[in-house]
Structures are given as C-alpha cells and as structure tokens.
Image (tube, rainbow, N blue to C red; front, side, top):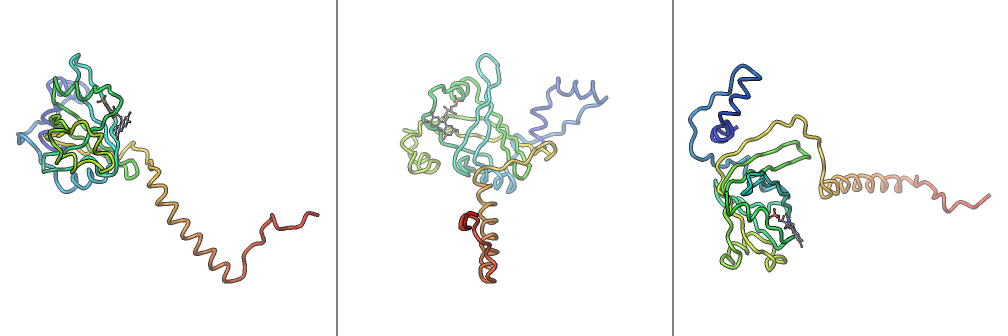
Length: 210
Ligand SMILES: Cc1cc2nc3c(=O)[nH]c(=O)nc-3n(C[C@H](O)[C@H](O)[C@H](O)COP(=O)(O)O)c2cc1C
C-alpha cells in the first residue's frame, strides 16, 4: 500500500477497529501529498477495458458506477493524472452530480484473468466536451466523439494493490476468443497431419442406411 493511501484510509475509527480486533493498529508513517503512478500501475491501467468508480452524494451515501470501453480508455495523461471520455448515456448523471459537491473518487480496477486488482484515490473534475475538443479527440474513439458530453479528469492522490487471494479467474469474450483461436490453429494443424497420413475419419452422414 502506498503510504498516502494508508494515511487516508487509516482514519481514527479504522485504527480503533484494528486495535479492538488485533490488539494493535497499523503504524501510520509520514507520507508525501501524492503517490505518483509507477510503470506497473501505468501498464495495468492501459490494459483495462473497465473499472468501477465510487463517488459520494450530497446525502453522504457512497455510489459506485461501472465504466466500460475499449482497452486503455482510461488514459494516463501524467504521473498523477488520469482521464476518460464520458458519453451521452442514461441521462441520470449521478456521478457527474456527485462530483459537483465532492470531488473525491475511489477507483477499482480488476484484472480477473490474472487475479490482480488496483485501487486508486483521487480528485475528479468534469470538463465540458465542447470546451475541450482536443481532449475529446485524444480520449474518444473517432466514431463516438460526437457523443462525448464531458471529460472526467482525475488527479490521483494514491493507490493500493491487493493480493490475488479470493479473486476467481474470469475471462472476457475477447480473452476466450484468443485462447480458442490458438486451440483452433492447433486442431487445424493436427487435422492437416491426419489428412496427409490419409487417416481422415469417414463422415457418419455419408454412411448408407442399413
Ligand atoms: C447509448 C448509451 C451508451 C453508453 N455508453 C457507455 C460507455 O461507453 N461506457 C460506459 O461506462 N457507460 C456507457 N453507458 C452507460 C451510461 O453512460 C451511464 O449513463 C453512465 O455510466 C452514467 O453513470 P452515472 O449516472 O453514474 O453518471 C451508455 C449508456 C447509453 C444509454
């Protein structure tokens, strides 16, 4: 866990809970204001095609929304800057509305296939798409640029990696297709060798009925 992350989530109540259950709490050491993303975090983010983003509403309730797009749609613009294009969607705008009152976000990025997960804390701001055509061009697929309503820019404060325990491996349709394609190539190669050896099995449909 990056130090700043531990400082932020290690509130007095959290430390009291640790003391209650384990007799001691994790020591909070001095931390920088922000932990910049390193090569591992940048590479991990670039491979994601979805993430979850939590915001806080005016009522104090936490709210989580799933975000999806082409691989790498959550773009790393700098060591502490992330951004993604937000398209016209269901017109609820819960995340957008929440961010107007409280800019804090918690991002949850999953790699189910490799059983890895990364959590990020940051401050998000909304930029209107019409005022930033350059960002729209940089962040959105050409075919969808006309539907971008806003850009969400996240100033990352810190991050935390979790251990793989309890993450059930799951594969996206694209990941399964890549695995199946390699198996199909092997089957075709083996079939070719069988054909070459003249050992192709007779098709049952061609057999005459008794
Ligand atoms: C036509 C349409 C397209 C959408 N495209 C995306 C998309 O590419 N990525 C995504 O995460 N959500 C997409 N959504 C979901 C919405 O954008 C949803 O409104 C958005 O997640 C808003 O969440 P919020 O209410 O928390 O702000 C789409 C919804 C609709 C109706």
